[in-house]
Length: 457
Ligand code: GTP
Ligand code: MG
Image 1 (cartoon, rainbow, N blue to C red):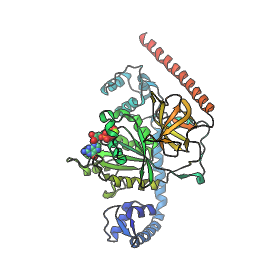
Image 2 (tube, protein in one colour):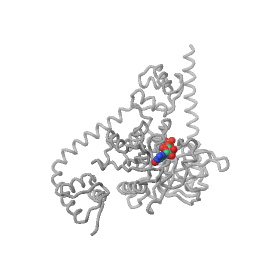
Image 3 (cartoon, rainbow, N blue to C red):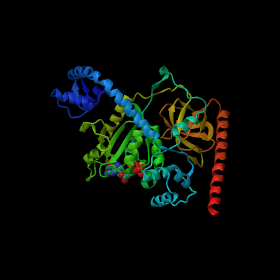
Image 4 (cartoon, rainbow, N blue to C red):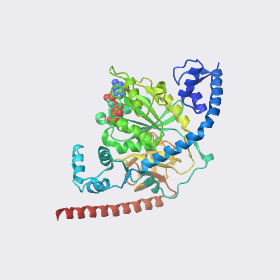
């Protein structure tokens, strides 16, 4: 007799697995989890009950909708309450903005191990930490807005018929040392984690893996507290977040931060409870802690997928991958491979032999060797492309992460990338942007020296 997974049935009916399990329990049918299978006959029964329930619910729906509208409103309000901060900003300017005495900020900064004077500019990472310490809600002049403004020409909407399925982009996030890189390593079954100096990830890495003939793009992020901006960027790029929590350590500050990033980005979270091989592992304690953040595990009646894994000993990795595929299939991720590519710089550096090398994530379109390309303040022409195995590629479609040679200068991580019709246009735009940047730097330098002058008087 044909069988179906509780999970798939729930998906088909657009319900939580929990609700399906409830119906099954009411029918006196024992199922242990969303991964359990039931017969087609039972599935039909569930569908019937579901249809009945739907009818009954239709009556109360109008009231709920009104409530939801109200909730959405308060959410938007909360967002707009954040203070908009434009960087670069000095300690003094920031103090004025948040209505604090500059000296208090300097003391706070000292507590954080940052020695600063009132005229010093603070970077976004430090500002974010400082704001958190002071309990103020800040927001940097919307990166999204900024990025959109970096697109040359209007954003072209794709027609529905041009869209094709694209691989999911999955970002691994979590506290330092909880095993993110090891997990990605065990997924690709090679040993790259060991080669990282000190084991602490200091940049974002990306690669594509194939699971059951389906591609998944993985992005690794650092867990060290100093890399907030990189984690935020990782969360913005992604379709699904894998939250890695070490079972011997539980939820830690950067775990909490990762949860917040994922929630802000509105992406689904899959929890990998890692290091279950350790003698002092307490996976249930982790699950308990997750509930405090509104992430109630499925086997506890919620709808957060949690998988206990050991990245080191490669336990349950297949189950985790299966969950990633399941969740991504629900997301209906699509892009148009037949247009000029757009994407984002994940990381970039100057290689002695090869010149500027940038890892790009293609968000839409197909990137091809020979394409004139613009990224932030720099431009160029795609001279060569490589995948994570160093194999040379002629083109890279949506969701691909590729290493690109051919930029005239090193672009910045996070830069919006766009293929233009001709190289000269790309070069002109880049040089205009460089001029603008120089002008604004001159202005802010002048301001700082004036401040200094007043201080001396
Ligand atoms: P950052 O990138 O610095 O945030 O760290 P990370 O989360 O990438 O952690 P990483 O993968 O570098 O692992 C940190 C340490 O935990 C290493 O010594 C790993 O060998 C160890 N580790 C990772 N996964 C497991 C696991 O499943 N079991 C055990 N016992 N150790 C693990
Ligand atoms: Mg790492």
